[in-house]
Length: 108
Image 1 (tube, rainbow, N blue to C red):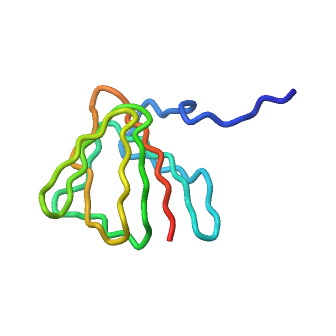
Image 2 (image 1 turned 180 degrees about the vertical axis):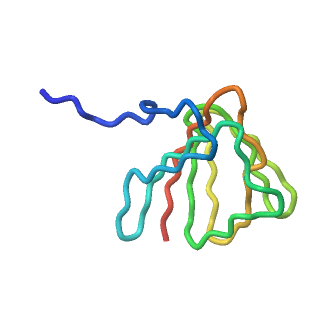
């Protein structure tokens, strides 16, 4: 039996000067990404204003999402969010002492 099944926790980079985004699957109306953060955040004044719906779960670590209205949501391992089209948001922090692994599903 061949065991070449990918694993979301394998190949985590040791040095992450920038957030790492890997497309795991891309089809006509859906995209799945693994995002790896390590103390990363969205630059001040920058907002995500996406043309797709997003559902995201924290598989490891944690982070804080801020909405345009100032509301903040702290996410830890196992927490997930639904971010509808055009809901302006940004990542204001991720853990600095360990990797944060996100799984994001985008669709329209």
